[in-house]
Length: 102
Image 1 (cartoon, rainbow, N blue to C red):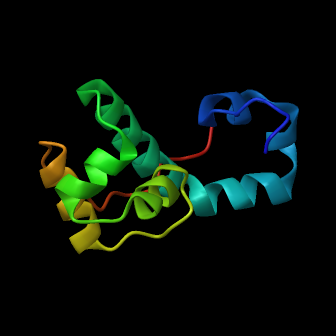
Image 2: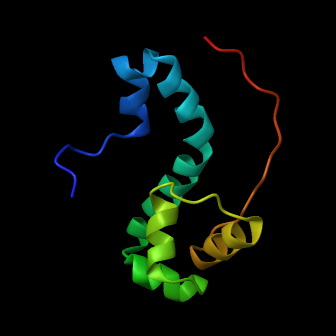
Image 3: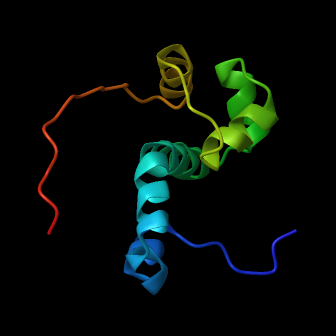
């Protein structure tokens, strides 16, 4: 069990830890997973659903939903499609040029 409060992505980016190269590199590798997980969690909570309810509607076990929401898995497109449909969302995938670092 965690003794420290959960850190959001914006809090991490604003922290001194983010100035360390190893932290920045790890963040960049995990950023998409965490962003997707956060979007799913926020929509699920907006609908008033438990993880079990989302899992039932998406045809996935609750532990898979929990791992996804915490950024602990690298989702496939079929998984993203199932989650989007269950949440009443449309999956949109884009390829963009990287933005210059500020």
